[in-house]
Length: 265
Image (cartoon, rainbow, N blue to C red; front, side, top):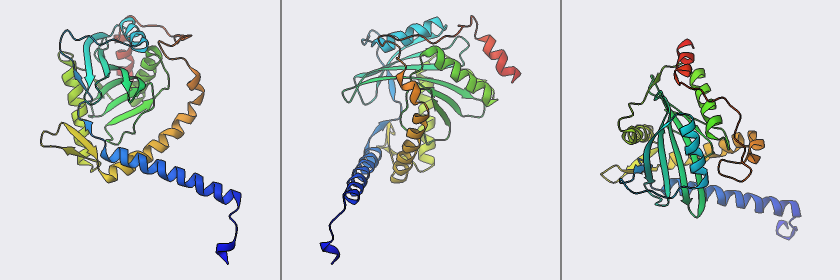
């Protein structure tokens, strides 16, 4: 008798939507579980190799120079050969900036990350674009969507002040090595927590475990909720775009001004 009951339109629609959502979740789980990730996302390119930079990367690098950052060369993505990044260090060596550019899966890749390490062993990480979830617990990541470097730096520095923990400056002698050590520490933490495992005896790459995949997909869902809170910022033109308007801020002459604020806190 139930087999002869016609399916109502709303029930059919609900089943279709549920099926689509289930397929998308399964695809995310499979992608998270089997994607092989390099321990060090970017590796410094040989001297003399100068990849072409996008308008976004050029604009962010110009802002880095205006803020007094020092350039430390270019790096290439360990897996995606058309993705590059430049590495910068702030005047007081408290903030490392990674400006990414290139093509990722045929899509334009544009991302800037600011790193600072704290005396308790953790890192404050600030990004201008939402990305993969962070499970290590030693990278405190926050996103300010579509921020230029001036706004991103101010937001990052305020996070350092709010943290109330001493900032440990980077040495700066080999900034790419410090970047690699920072990522290696994060990967070891993921492995220790059971969220990831190394691939191969060299331990140069890793994958999420099944449990880690479930966690990262769930955290990814939570990050979409955070992105909705910044939906008004989606209309902001990014550096290098037509009609981009730089954020209003005063560029300090010395980073020691910020250092004094941290000591006072």
